[in-house]
Image 1 (cartoon, each protein chain N blue to C red):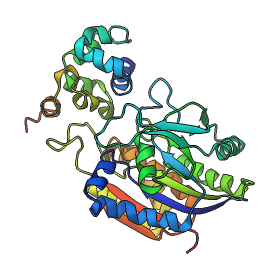
Image 2 (image 1 turned 180 degrees about the horizontal axis):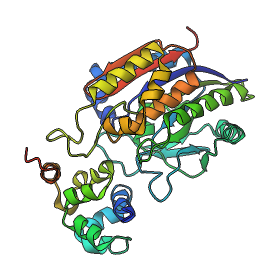
Image 3 (image 1 turned 135 degrees about the horizontal axis):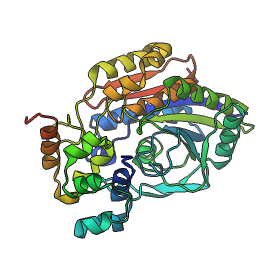
Length: 90
Length: 277
């Protein structure tokens, strides 16, 4: 698992306005051309940031998900899911 | 021949321009303003910026350890849309200086990546807007990978800074050169330890105090020894920006700073070195 496709998606989310908009309206279609393994693709579509974190996704890049409300993630929900994934409900 | 006249270290939080406009006598305005006063006092003609790009120009498709941006002008930030962030359509670049540094780098064994078509993100524009607001001084971006592990060795980054000092001395132009190091000492954005409602985690206070003490005391060897990949990782996912400060120290040599201020909560330092004192 190279994580390249994940990091590419997070790169495009910031740098490519058309990608950002398509990710909002058609997430699966936006991710379709990217070199993602099935688990990576599903974790992104689910907004499963705990799994993305445990895969080794760069957290600075991952912070763009709540910043642009990708996959419906607010900052609060992003943090809640990350902490839950760390075994910390606090 | 060119001469190095000053070196300046500041952070680059994207919220800075708006905060300074809203609170022109606030802490951020004061901290940046003090460094800017030192810069204006030594009045450099050109500015070299040791910077870590935030996956804007450089990402996993191309990830140089060291890179130079050499063109007549650049622009930015583009799609980096923090509220109040100023976007500059034409930032003058010190092109001939950049060509010179590129060649000197190769001569000294630094196989620098060269880009002649690039933009800059807030990590360049925020320090420039705070320290060189009219963009009247051409600048040269010298990118150091301080964000995508594995990071370069601190001693190698320091050596790159030494190379830059030699390149300035060898530049056959009667130019006054200033150096800016852009970045945090400690910071972690988007990780599991972020403060509730905030993008970042609390700064690693022990690391910030240690680095600031090294800056004040000129204890560069101790800093180079301590700034391992593991220690930088512990200090946060943007603590590698500390490498930009280490590059600056390579250029500064034995000279002590005229000012070092620590902003512990933000994990930042604000510092200036001057050659007229």
